[in-house]
Image (cartoon, rainbow, N blue to C red; front, top):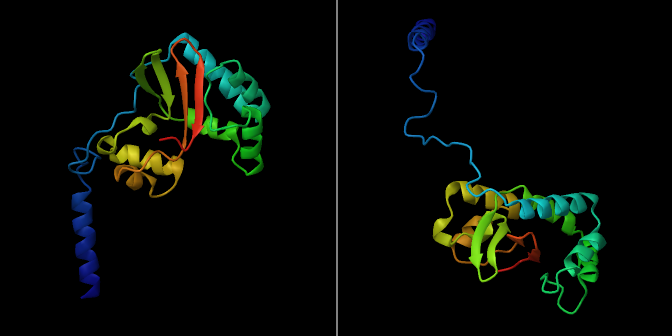
Length: 180
């Protein structure tokens, strides 16, 4: 009996394998196309991103602080400290600002209108409302911030990670951690 069952299963499998399936997609699966950058970066923003990536890759928080200091209204979480002192403290705790910045630039950006013009913001997920977080967004959020963070954001919690903004003229406006 055992041999005949195996023979029957081989015959069924062979018959099913004769014709290729119409589609290799699971039934009902959505076609997901690679994301096309819907809002390409203006040249000044792209230049600032290039410069920030270059500095961040070197891991030099002092150089990042010098760049931040060129903008009088630049915002970080430094409080009463200089940007250099704050980012040195972050570095000493193992939270390297340059590494965090490079992680943000690995994601798409969002674009928000402001009184200053368009602001390009990384990562795009930081700008999503709870009801706008799709399954793909949730996966990206959890990949960036840690497991369960997408669920927290869907429940109305504030964005706990870093966020970076550059004005459309290329001015670096902010690099905040745990902003809401």
